Amino acid sequence: MYERYWQLDRPAFECDLDVRFYFASRSHQGALLKLRFALEHRKGAALLVGDHGIGKTYLTHVLEQDFQDSRTGLIRLNFPQLSPTDMLGYLAMRLGATPGPGLPRGTADQLLCSLETRLQQLATEGHRRILFLDDAHLLQPQHFETLQLLLSVQQQMGDPLSLVLMGRTELLSKTQRVPGLDQRICVRMVVDPLSPEETGQYIEHRLQMAGQSRFMFQEDALRAFWEISQGIPRRVNQLCDLALLVGYADGITTLTSVEVEAAAEELVTVSMD
Figure 1 (tube, helix red, strand yellow):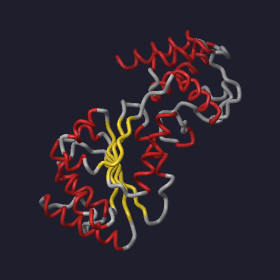
Figure 2: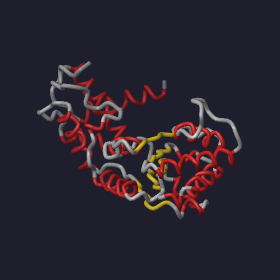
Figure 3: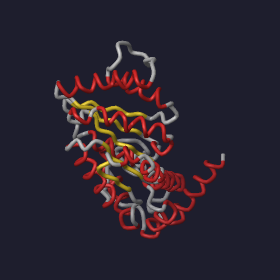
Figure 4: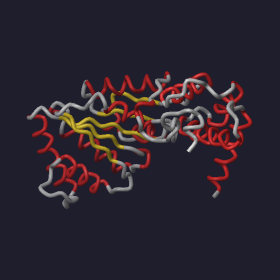
């Protein structure tokens, strides 16, 4: 809507998964490097935790670019409400361990047996799969025990399945209550919010990637962005998007903390509605 006014080639602050806009903050880049190491060396399982909107799922999409070869398949599981048996059934379907396209029926033991056979086949063929499990902090102990069994059955096969658990920080303590799974987690990464300095750099980076060569935010605006968002990238995006809209509506070309605070009020109003 306001892209032409601000001389942008594309929206700069969409809350989507466009990896062209990746900003390598200290914490995000550190987590990315550790996760890449874990997957490249087939370490079994990895843990990625942080607040809502911090960019956990986004980081895994950035990482996907390194695993686009024909022998690697990527699976995303975004249904923490599934029962442990249905979770196994979904994985069996996605891994090709079942004859039909639908969710397979059977007991947990039967599904594990089918998965073991399929994982052995993948290992023999030199193939592998990476499973990204989002909102894992919502899982119950039975889910973690099931995942432990799944990792156990493939241990002698060269680990054709790698598991990445993503969720809020309480996921750390939840996995610790299942020692068999916790011992198979090789890296635990906590993604921190952006610092005040990184928040300004993040905003500038996204504007540059959107084609803007002139930085329109004053220093007090950058401070306000960080104070209100607390360095959470999704909140920064929402605030910047609305601040640009406010500036466009008011016909101004330089944005201050006044416009940022107006944007914050809009966000509060929207959330209350």
